[in-house]
Length: 188
Image (cartoon, rainbow, N blue to C red; front, side):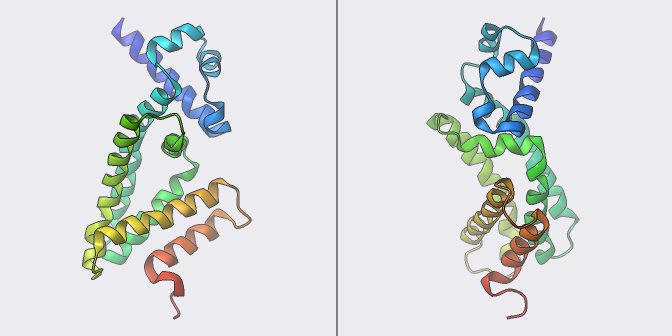
């Protein structure tokens, strides 16, 4: 019985990833989850009390995997500059991943304060990964720099997800340049 519930919960989460990937937070509804999984709508409520609970669970499951991929990319880099570049590139590479949609969905307005706080704490762990590299580069306030660097990454993510006029590769290169060289670019 427990194994069946685990499988059903996994199927619901996978369906939620697909719905988020296809249509954003608006597409994530209990009727849509029920249809995708073949469950009765009332059965979906046995697993999750709200859409926010689905998003919170997706973040709890997917964010650590996503963050581990960023961390692994940084670990392969041999210099602080390389770590910064890997931090930016890997996050932007993951934008197309269905798991990323769940992480982006954390801004859904219906999340309660407790869920938002858990997600902020997880996001803080991602930002903490880059603090050491910024300190090694001589940044006078590496924690603040890390938060601002994540702001550049977040802006690039939004630009890619909006289907901006620029190709995602161009957005990624601009974000990496901004991270490594500031607003003036490498030739200043």
